[in-house]
Picture 1 (cartoon, one colour):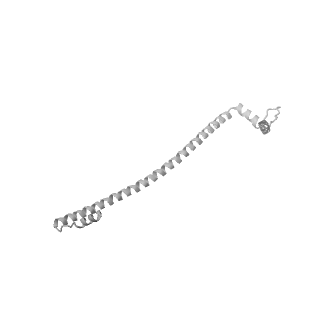
Picture 2 (cartoon, helix red, strand yellow):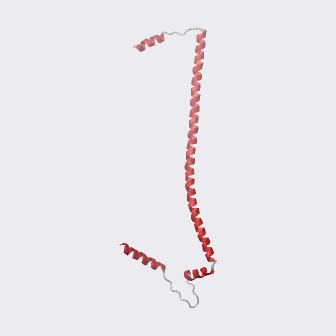
Picture 3 (cartoon, helix red, strand yellow):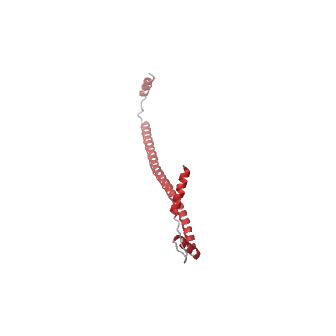
Length: 142
């Protein structure tokens, strides 16, 4: 009921048909258009900034994943490098030992069964001793 009364009151308001009223109405319309234009422009700028930040955020996320992968590869490469350095050190030690004549003669006698004159060699197979050790340990484990 109160709405009907308010509607009737609103309808009772009449616009003045003066030059000043028309001028103010036109100014009001222009202000409204400018306000709508400003709101649309701010919204467009906000959407543009949101798109740009989304793209940059996605790229940063991908770059972080790639950096983590590269760090993992770096760790693997460093461990492999350390292993290679250990192997190189062992090989350098072997080379230095091969320069020693006594070591070379011992190596040739033990590995390649070279002997001095009048010496007899009796080879002992290592695989038999390993099999015997394994059989002994398996029977003791039971």
